[in-house]
Amino acid sequence: MKDLLGREVKDLSNELWWGVPRSQIEWYPTVDYSKCVGCGICFITCAGKKVFDWDVEKNRPVVARPYNCMVGCTTCATLCPVGAISFPSKDFIKKLVKENKLIQKAKEIIEEAVKKQKEGE
Ligand code: SF4
Ligand code: SF4
Image 1: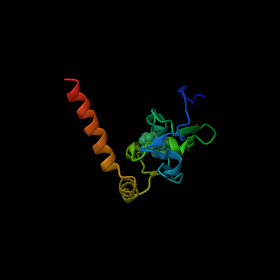
Image 2 (image 1 turned 180 degrees about the horizontal axis):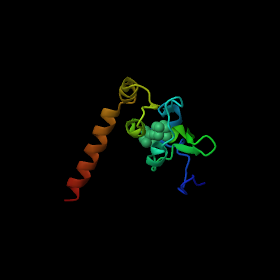
Image 3 (image 1 turned 120 degrees about the vertical axis):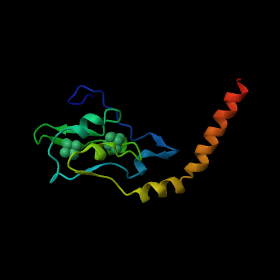
């Protein structure tokens, strides 16, 4: 499947995020159409994940694949010139990090990689 710009689109909702099914994490953009001016920056810039499709009739983005969104990413909201895109709060992310023990998991991954690197020296 390809989008309006001919870019390959994949459904990433079955992937895992730190061992958690991505479809169980409610992190994705919401577009306020009363503010959106249809510039297309969000649609074009989300090139890696392809969260958005483009509604050619209404000339505006559609959050077509919400669970493709990278957890914690807010790039499209940052770039939107009129502040039409919103995400859950930072507390939502903090809670996810805590509940899923990301600090411990990250530490273990790094320690293991460093160990392997040293063993290979
Ligand atoms: S970047 Fe903002 S204004 Fe532009 S299309 Fe996306 S939501 Fe609309
Ligand atoms: S936050 Fe990042 S990954 Fe998610 S829709 Fe926006 S640009 Fe795409």
